Amino acid sequence: MSKAQTQPAFDAPTLLEQVADMDIQELEDFVRQLNRMIFQRKSADNEFRQRTLLRLINQTVLSREKRALYLRLVKKLEKDTLTESEHLQFIQLTEEEETLRNERVQMLVELSCLKNIPLNQLMQDMGLQPVGHG
Image (cartoon, rainbow, N blue to C red; front, side, top):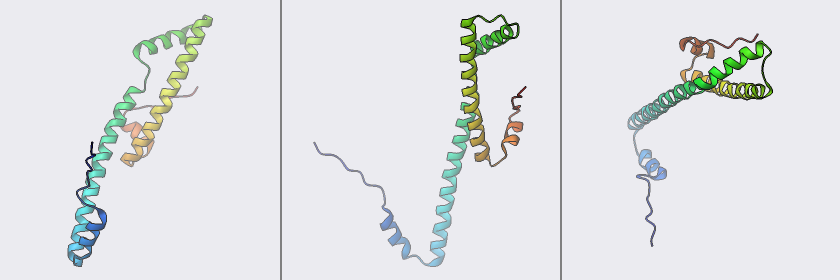
């Protein structure tokens, strides 16, 4: 059984040899076109990554059921009526929420970098409020 080997449509050394024969104007035009192609690909990748991050950010929250349970447990904690098993559930949900929040912040930071705006501005644009402590 023989392996079919595929070769790229061009190889860089051959392309550079061909480019070396261009006059300055042709070379400058070629570089401009190449830069335009690079920019378009980066823009497409950037936009795709931004959409992906937005989707993932929206997924980094507790499910409705877990959020409702968490809120019930908070009320019981405030009344000092948590059982030991409920306390363990509360700790587990708190840790899960913290992990999700950390992931969300990391993604928000990346998104703000991709959009080239400060994190606070991104959060304001998205209608997000920072979580208060206290």
